[in-house]
Image 1 (cartoon, rainbow, N blue to C red):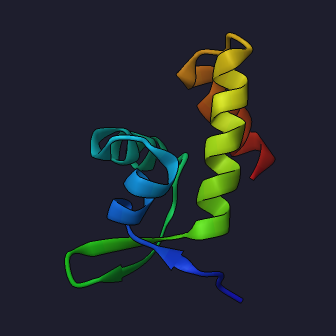
Image 2 (image 1 turned 135 degrees about the vertical axis):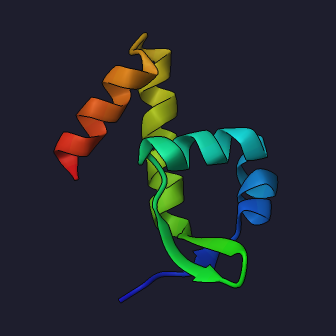
Length: 76
């Protein structure tokens, strides 16, 4: 069952990250588009929150974004 869907604009406001960061994380597979509505992408709100918390924790521990990607893909 899908959770509450959230747009990139809502992610920007709620989590204080840039649109470019959302695109970058999406392209890397760290954020997953769950639905498309016209030209807009929608993400699962809870998945976004969990992913961004995990990314921030790992970045603060000194991991590179490439290593973070590799580790999160293995966990998925």
